[in-house]
Image 1 (cartoon, rainbow, N blue to C red):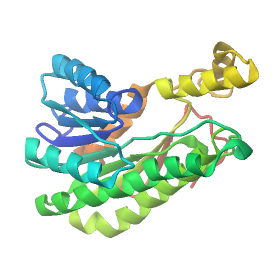
Image 2: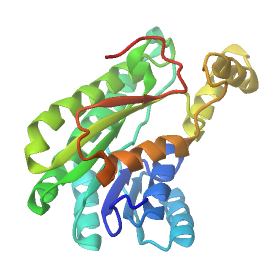
Image 3: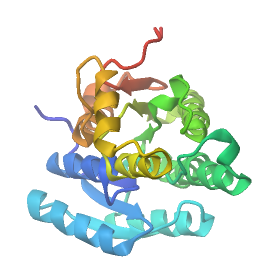
Length: 264
C-alpha cells in the first residue's frame, strides 16, 4: 500500500531509543528522510546508522535538549538546512522521575513539564511556519495512558500527558486551514528502556522484582502482554500518511484494551 510518504521529511524527538527510534525506523521504511533528536549523541549516531543500513534513507542525528529553547531552534534549522523542508514532526521526548507525590520536588515537576509540555510547544512553534509555507504537514504528540487514569508513581506523567493531548486538539482547530493535521497518541504499558528503568527504580524502593512487575502489568492488559514500540510507530505512520487526511484533533490510545473508561 502506498502511504504517500516517499521523500517526505520527518523530525522525531526522543529518537534514539524506544518509541522514537521505532517511529523513525518505520517512517524511513516508507521512504521518509528523518532527523532524529535526543540529548545523547552516541545513542543517536548508533540509531541513525542502524536505520540508514536497514532502509537506505538519509537519517541525520541532531543533539538537542528540548528543555533548552535554543537547542530546539537549532534542531529545526539544522533539519531544514539538511533536507530543505519538514513535513512531519513527532513530538516524543520525555524525561521524568517515577516517584510518589510527596517524593516529587519542584525540580522534578518542572523538568517533566519543561521537557514534554513546553518542549512540544516549542518544537511545534518552530515547524509550523515551514509547514504553512509548503501547504501542510503532520504533527503527532506522544502522550501516555497515565492521562486517562491514576498511577501513583506517574502523577506528573498524567498531568503532562493530558496537556499534550489538549495541545493537539487546540492546534488542530487552529491550523487545519493550513493543511496541518495534529493528533495525539496515548501509549499504554510499552516495552521501552524508559519503562524498564521505572520498574528497576520500583525494585530498588520496594524489593518487587522487575519480572514480577511486568507480569502484573501484563495481567491488567486484556491482550495479555505489553505493547511493542513498533505498534505505536505503525499508528504514527498511519496518521502521517495520506490515508489519514480526514483525521485531526484526535487522541488515540494504544494500550491493548487496558483503559477501563469509555471515551466518545
